Length: 347
Image 1 (cartoon, rainbow, N blue to C red):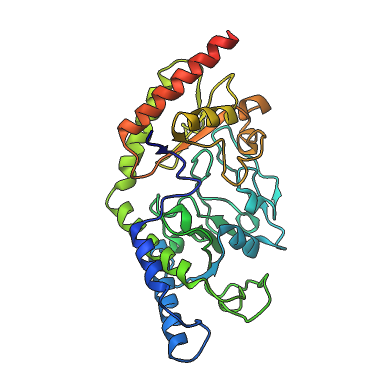
Image 2 (cartoon, rainbow, N blue to C red):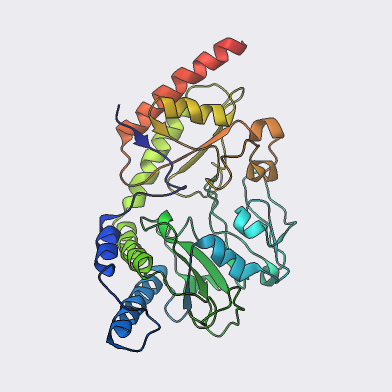
């Protein structure tokens, strides 16, 4: 049985451009901090990659600080700053903030004080896209980078978080994007790499893969790849909504990521849905990959006003440019068949 991967918000397939760049970087011997010829060659590759990522992100003139991923970037941006956020933020951000901001039933956040606020561009579970106010302290751009038209320079925020593996790059590499001139205290003490903001020898292979993926993602976005993904997502949404089982399509009244569909199926636990679809050959999730292994209701959905039971009956289906209309309709058929069986048992 050929499996169908519908969990692109958790991680994406490695792009061939990223794979090729990483293989080439394996032959670059030097440490970027060394002053000899080998070190200078490594540093030149790293700085070209930094510039390419900045260009893809619309962050020319900002500082790109390489980290092990968006989680570390969040700690670097948020630790000790007394920031506020809403409970729809990824736990990597909310762990450092006071999650006291109001969320409406469509997943949109009210921001009274942008300068003290961390606010994501898009939610990984529901796909809901926020209207970012100017002057924002921190924005998690991870899910939007590569899927939405985006320029850090236009956002007017101090810092942004990004991760390579969400757009076809390798796992274990990300970046904190910092408005030039802003002071950020290093959380790791050591050699003072990354402009003194993140000590430790840089992951040159990962950085090269990140840059290649970011460039390819920017080309895909410009070519309309994600507009086509949105069309397929909407076909799936319509197919499932037409079943008239009382299914709730979460956040569908708000602007959403083009690839994300979050469904609440009354009477069918989210983790049971995930297992059933896995057995049927489809990879979906019950929420953020960083928390879906824990059997608990989505705090994102509870923040939007869904109760404990409803929030525990949700799954996320997230698509990518490789996903076809035929594949999502096959998923809809398998999901509906299993759901009908579940409903007949409890009827």
